[in-house]
Every structure is written in C-alpha cells, then in structure tokens.
Image (cartoon, rainbow, N blue to C red; front, side):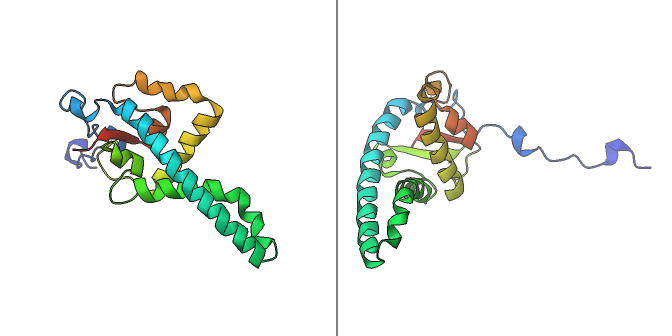
Length: 163
C-alpha cells in the first residue's frame, strides 16, 4: 500500500487562494471607491436610459413593420439593454462601464482576473435586485474593508481604482 507521505500534495483549492488586492499593501486601490461608484452609477444610468430609449424606438418601428408583433418585446428592452451594457463593458477589455472609466475605476475578480461577460451580467442582475428589493444591502460597502457591496461579494468581484 502507498504511504501517505509519498502522495503528491494537492494544489490549493480555488477557495484557498489569497485575495489579489491586499488592503494593507495597496490602500490606494480602495481610496474613494464608494463615492466614485456612486457618480459612475449616475453616469451609467443616463447612458442606459439613452440606450433604452433608442431600443424602444427601434421596437416601436419594428412593431409597425410587423403589424404589432414586435411590440411584444417591449417588456424585454430594459433588462436586455441593462444586462447587455454591463456584460459588454465590464466583461470587455476595459473591465469597466463608461461611468466607471470616467471615474478611474475598474472591476476585477477577487483573485485578480478579468470579469467574464456572464459574471458581469450576473453582477448587474444582483445589483438591480438588491436596489429594487432591499436597498440597505448597498450600505454593506461602508463596513467592508475592500469597499465591496453584497452583490460584489456574491459575484466574486472587487471594484478598484485603475492602476
């Protein structure tokens, strides 16, 4: 029988990996993040509103062309635009929405990797859910050392100042 000491050590699991962004070594990554996120949210809300208005106009025109059939899509316009916007911007090469780029922020996975479009859409979905259902959850960032909201923790992301 094989001795336990001769077996190769298992690599550390994904959960056991250390956080890529150390608060003690790089405090500048988290300076003013809450304020910047709030301003970025306002900018992104304006961008999403404009994109949604354009999408509603397109669906209205398509509804006329399709004799009203495309008007069934009206309920999907806002969710598709909002989640798509976050998936393409946060999950894209810049790792930030337009508002976040303006404020000098970027979104990264807690272990340092880039956010995928699917995780970015999930992150946005959790944000809108927490905003609509239980807004005080967003206050978690004031008590978290890395300034993460609860939806950030659930998605496994961290918002930092761009390096």
